Amino acid sequence: MFVDDCVRKHVAGRLDAVGASQAKYWATEPQNKLVNQGVQLHGGYGYMLEHPLARAYLDSRISTMHGGTTEIQKEIIGRSLGL
Picture 1 (cartoon, rainbow, N blue to C red):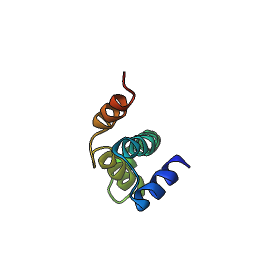
Picture 2: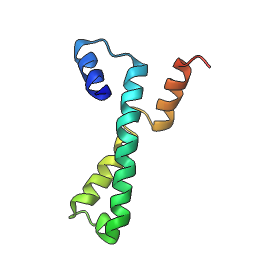
Picture 3: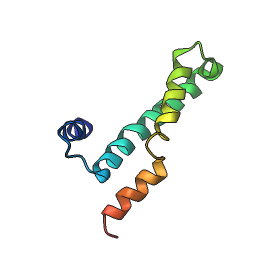
Picture 4: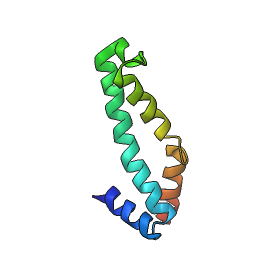
């Protein structure tokens, strides 16, 4: 629901950098964790590009880098907290 709300705000032109960082972090980290578990479960198939899991692995890895790495997203979110 949070990511859907962020998409609605983006379409309306009301999404700020903090909200975008939160949505990206919230969506990409669980995806990355799940795909890594799939690669561990399927072993070598996870590295063969013909297998859907290998393509999912590539997509999940790059999604943590596009638009700023996860560490940058954490930095943006942290600065918004005013700590």
